[in-house]
Image 1 (cartoon, rainbow, N blue to C red):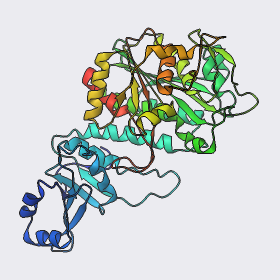
Image 2 (image 1 turned 30 degrees about the horizontal axis):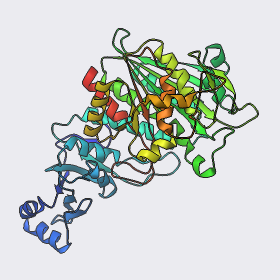
Image 3 (image 1 turned 120 degrees about the vertical axis):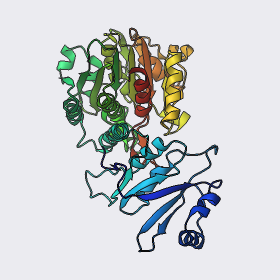
Image 4 (image 1 turned 90 degrees about the vertical axis):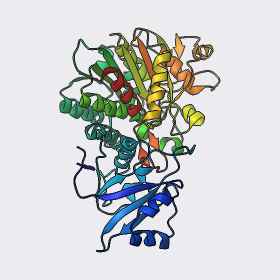
Length: 459
């Protein structure tokens, strides 16, 4: 199990969750000294409020933690994720837990995360007893996956270039007995990945296509594709400094699919998994690709470059074309692709696209159940004409600047034909300000929702 968890039976301090509706009964059930202390401290059962109850010997007798009522419209099931930053060293257990004790335990674990590669972490030696009836191994898989993605995203580009991203994928492959190979540098041209090469050739770190497989070859094929732009200057259409500041996170799609792959392989789902990651840095040099250049993609479609800052969809196009060639039962791609998605839905609610109505309904259901929010947007066919080019089969950006996330999805749709179902997720991979269970910084989005769907389908 993950070190944040301890097995039931250990001496653990009780944490009681209280709401305005339950506080009177819980208060009445406290012993007289604890009740008097809570009254003297002015404790109120408001969401996020906590109180440490002293024991007669000077130790810690218990913790009160406030939640909104279960029917409150803004109730956050991850609110227990604040606890690791509030509690002193020790082991804790949930008493009268909230509606979904599994999510509360997961939030507690995810809220304990700290990025400690470059500085000593804060001392937070808190542990949680696995609640009864909750699968601690599955909580561990999800926690490890999310922490892996956060670590990769938070690592700056000087230590997380294409080669380092490949090394992380290789460590994961070794851990789970997966097979992995890569195509690097000019070999991308020989192996027919021209768009990956074009985007990444200007950088000092060679571009590459990482390809991992795991599982029984006869099992249903599920393929994950993740955008691995380890830093994005915007290319010759250079970003302003404010937009470039967080571009170490532009490989968040790759990080999230590696997190999802860890969950899948760790659980041993009955599927043949493939993970494809085009890893590049979109840099500026004399060899950088240019506006109005035209490149023929792996699929054979010619693409005119309308903007070099729309590079993620280019490398995903070649990767999706490769993945599509074996006609997987399900093809999923994730990438930090458009500012338009953030304007429409903000940083916490990634849009997704699919033609498969049953898949869409199931993904939304699992996203809600896992508190891993997603929102469906349409593959609106009338906007497909925005990708028209006068000199090539299509352009990489839409005319007029409207509907940027939808147009990006329509561009990628051109490179998927044989897969039985396709799911595209336009994620942000970053939490701008800390929330319960989600510290500020790199964030693994959509992976838990997709994992829950795959576990239900192939578990």
